[in-house]
Every structure is written in C-alpha cells, then in structure tokens.
Length: 451
Ligand code: SF4
Ligand code: SF4
Image 1 (cartoon, protein in one colour):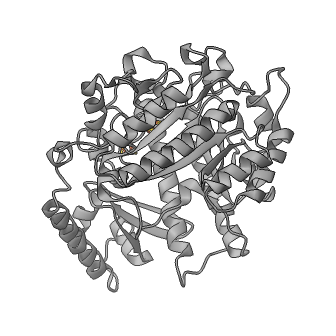
Image 2: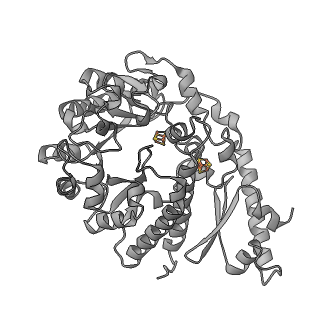
Image 3: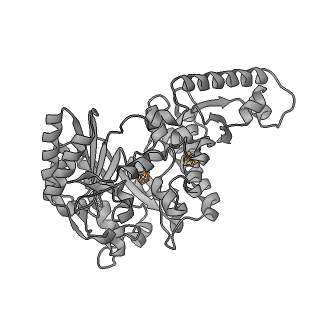
C-alpha cells in the first residue's frame, strides 16, 4: 500500500484548524503537523507530488508503521493483555451528603428524590470506605478520595474526621491519600479554608459562568438565583487557596450554546483554572445531535479566545484543552479509561458502592457495600472489559488513545449499552481534542501564535 492510501485509511484522521494541518494516528496516538503541500497531496487537492511532499508523507507512513510495531511488541494492541491480572482500587467518590442548600436542575438534589435516599454519611460508613480503599488498592502507592454530594460541606465534621482518619490509615499502609472537595462554595468560611489548606485538599468549585446562565439552572431552596453569593464565596476561596490545586467547574446546556461567553465571564472574574462540561440529561435543556454544528463552532471560538489570552500574556487553563504529549496519561490509563467500577467507586451515605457517582442510587448497579466489600465482582468486570479494544466503535476511532472509550454512564444513559458510546459525547470529545492538539502546536516553544 502506498503512503497516501495508508495515511488516508485505518484510524488516521486529518483536519485543519487555524491554518494548522494535523494528522493523527488513532492506533498509536502519534500526531504530525503537515505543511501545505503534503496536506494538499494527502487531501487529494493536488494530484502532482510537489517538492518534498511525497517524501514527507512516505517518512510519516514509515514512522507510523514503526510505532504500530512498537505498540504490538509492548502488547498494547491486544485486549487480552488488559484483562489479565487484578485491578486495584485507586479512587473513591464519597457522597457524604445527599442533601444540598441549592436545587440545581441537573443534580439529583434538584429533583427532590436524592437518588432514592436523603441523608448524611456517618463517620462509621466513611471510615469503612477508607479501610476498603486501603485494602483494595493493593500495591498502589497513591490513592484519592473526593468528598461529593449534594453539598459535602453540610457534613463538615465528618469530612474533617475522615481526612484525619484517612491520613492515619494511609501512613500505616505506606500510601499517600489525596483528598478533594467538590462544593458550591456557599458554606465555605475561614475555618474550613484553613483546614483545606492545612490538609492540601483539592477544591472543585461549581459555577456555570454568566449570572443569567447560572441562576436559571442553580436556584436556591426558595427558587432565587445563587450566582452572586456563589461567586463571592468562590472568589474568596481561590484567593485564600494556598496552592493551585483547584478548578472552577460549570455545566453547559442547550440553553447556553454560546458557552465561550461563560468561560470569558469566569476568566474576567479572575479565575485561571476552568472546566465546563456538557450536560447529560433527558430534560428539555439536553444537548441534541442537531446542536452539534453550533457546539463544534463554539469550541473553536473558545480555542480562539484561549489563544488570544496566551498572545496577550494573560493565559488561563481550560481543562479539556490541557494536552501534554510528553506527560499524558500512562498507556494503561489511556486504554482502560476512567476506571469506573474497578479502579474508581462511589459510596452512598449509607455505604453502598457503585461504579461511579453517576450510578449512585441505581439498584442494578450496586456493586457491594463498604462493610461487605465487593459483592458483585462480575459487575466490576463488565466495566473493566468496556475498554477501547472491546468497543467496535472505539477500535476504529482516531481519538481512542486520548478519549479512552468515553463515559460509561453516558453510554448506558443514551444507548442502554455499556459497549456503545454516546455519539454526541464522542463528537464533543473529538472536537475538544482537535482544538487541544492545535493549541498545543501553536503554544509550543518557538511557535508563532496567529492573530
Ligand atoms: S468513546 Fe467515542 S470518541 Fe472515545 S474512543 Fe470511543 S468512539 Fe472514539
Ligand atoms: S463513567 Fe463517566 S461519569 Fe463515571 S467516572 Fe467514568 S467518565 Fe466519569
């Protein structure tokens, strides 16, 4: 097969953005920047090989073939290598409060059912969860636990108790345990911020961006908007945070497909670590396939704004544009994905275990309890086997080693099938990745950032 037909088929993907021509090899994750002549030749816009274009494409094809051979030797192209050996638990999502002081529409708390159970986690349940993490993490040195809800600050005394218990246990087991707290910020005060700093905890602070966007989705118990109070609190939290281990995190819906404006609002409010996630819901504000052209254009607009801030020497971090070719996730993580159900588990207030926070309260996905341990190992195995080699769609996808197979919860919610990734989620993931790669190219040392 000649170089052009080889580079045009399989899991190769080419695209052009902001005048940068990119070729990605899905199977190995290799990325090349093409000059215009090679691009035209590969794209069929030029029948005549000009200059060194053909030689360049032949060199790229040879590199790609060698990379494939290397991967094959490492055993990274075959499913059975992923399914051998034990998986060790790494992270817990501790739902310490199934209660909240807000009623955000896209949260279970906003619907009033609290995933079937309202209440706070006792320290007994939390400690049993940490014991389980210590036991099931085997030889892993670094473990993580996220305090989540509802609003975890409603159960602050238990949070504090679990942090000190967790640190003691980690020391006994010779491990490191990193804690994170996901909060709407309203109950943060000096005492809590001092504790968070002393314990080097990470912070995820929930805010959606512009006041009207946030207030429409995140009312308080009386139905009033929460934006001004949340903004004041999280500004204070970020100002007092002793390290850079924090993110402001929002959600966008079909009601704010111009979400670059929300990111701009957050940047101009002084936040430099920003994440904005697409909503997953079947409510009226859900994202639909017909929204995709707008969503894709909006990510390009966001990438353009991101580059503009870089040029002006006022950069910010956008979670999904963070892309480090040299220090990306290890190969196992790239192949196995988020780890839900085997490396990552969520714990409900009464101690039931689920594959991740999105499944809490769904009886069919209750995998065990903190007291009895894993009672349905076959459920964890199903999640573990839902990796890119076993999903037909992922095997032929150019983004496979960067996306790692998508979100299991989305696949089940949209398609009722763990092995069938949600198309909308895939397209959003691919678009973010296209932008991230070009941003990486344009912001690498010596690159000129075009106006
Ligand atoms: S989940 Fe979608 S985007 Fe991700 S690797 Fe699979 S097919 Fe590609
Ligand atoms: S299944 Fe989806 S929501 Fe759950 S941990 Fe994985 S990526 Fe996150």
